Amino acid sequence: MTGIEKPGIIAPLTTLALLLAAAPAFGGNCHLGLNVSNVNLVWNTSLPTQQINFTVTKQKTDACDFVVTFSKGGAGDYNRRMTSGASTLNYQLYKESSLTNILKDAPDVTSANDAITGSFGTGANQSQSLTYFLQIPYNLATSPRLKLAGTYLDSYVVSVFNGTASSGLSGPDQTAGVSLSTEVPRNVQLSLVCTGAGFDPNSTAQSLDFGTLTENAVRTFDIRILTNAGFSVTFASQNQGVLRHTSPDVRTTIPYAVTVNSAFQNLTNGPVVVATGSGQTTTSGTVNPVSITIGSLKDEIAGNYSDNITVTVATTE
Image (cartoon, rainbow, N blue to C red):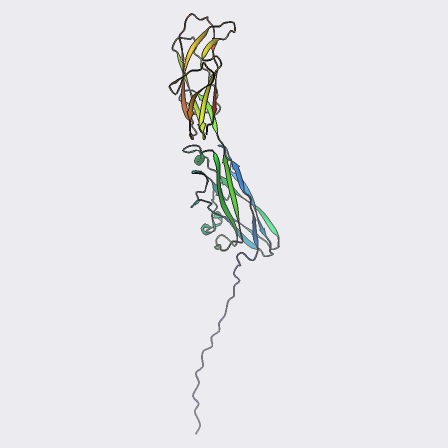
């Protein structure tokens, strides 16, 4: 009898193909580095946008893309600001001089518009000089009032990553801190303008022509003071508060009265403080109305009479 052999169970053969892909080694392949500089500014009403230079370096031979990001500084958002005590001074960091794209920190970078990007070819010990732009917005530095005088400080972190802005950033190759300091100096400006006119830094004199003098004739003008550190205004009369004949041989005088902010000012005894203020003003300045009234006229000798009043303003804080 021929034996019958039971067929064995043959397991299906499965072939596994493993696709091995080389993932970019963030922070390893290129050995990227940063050279940054601290920023020290002196603010004024015409301070331009600042171009700030820095350098990205590569030590190793591999070619690679890189992304440079910027932290928020001491602010909790991208309304970046420096502080001086309780006072703040806003600033912003931009990718380009047109101030179009705000530079952001790594977690918030979703495109090349949010960071500074670039690439290196193969070869070791390379470097690239790059720029970003810092602006202190004029409207935020002067509204609702001028910023107080002082030193305003902040710091932010610059980081460089291997990779591209759209690929997701992980593990910077290097970070570097930037200290930002802006000195807002004491500022006081004087403007002598027609009554009701606005502040004009180029208007620092007034000529009051009374024509033919009559008793109780009045002329007015405004003193406008722009300051961020308080002010004191002083009047000094060349003739101790009277009008004198323009001929040195004539000794007669004509009295006049001066009021500043509706308060009478006695100019007979040398310089006198006629107005004060504290804190900050707007860019329109604080207004101090001045009125000059001709006094009693007797039988004075005919001719031209005049006086010169020197107006001086100084900071007080």
